[in-house]
Image 1 (cartoon, rainbow, N blue to C red):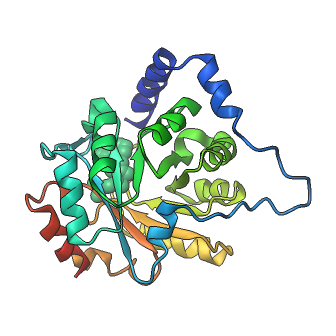
Image 2 (image 1 turned 120 degrees about the horizontal axis):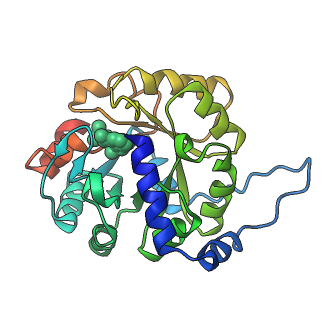
Length: 264
Ligand SMILES: O=C(O)c1ccccc1NCC(=O)[C@H](O)[C@H](O)COP(=O)(O)O
């Protein structure tokens, strides 16, 4: 499934972006630091700052459909965003992938227009132009998937930062975590969902979060996917800075109440 979505998004990017887009985006990248100097460019952005508060913060996702659930809910993005904010979410994630998640540019723009919360562009970023779009559409952050970008992650990470966006770098296993750490990610999301089988293992995030800390990672850590009720959060409460929750909130019928109940 992941491979199919990535191929589709790469096709979309080829149809949308010219070489000029890529050059313009890549032209914003700052020069590499001198060898031996510290590469950290740690200016905490709006999205990171929203998650860096004491306790477990919630990133609530505007998600209308998914490969694992099919149709979830015919959400109006602006109404959903207001409800998530009212319920106590710290930040929002908005799907912009159209075929499998029912997302689009308007969803992100409408969310940004009505809430004071920072928003993540949740998509399968495969082209620098998609990061230019994220900024243009009002996102404060973009998702970078290690499973999709592989060794290109470092370039995309620098580009995202140089565009003034925070990057949520997603990993699912130790190998991907080692790539994210080597690239200098400062906000790492550990996905409980295996994107090739779509199976959820709620032990995956606490395990890899502990591993990241044991390796000296001092940035922020987000546990992603599969959380349905407050009890599901017990293993991540003491180790993660934030959780990212989509389907269970989006399909709840009362989004503000669902957020309050989850965070109780
Ligand atoms: O959600 C899916 O089925 C899915 C399938 C293939 C690639 C990505 C997918 N989801 C992206 C996500 O990471 C989730 O939207 C996010 O973490 C929230 O998960 P959940 O709370 O389980 O909806």
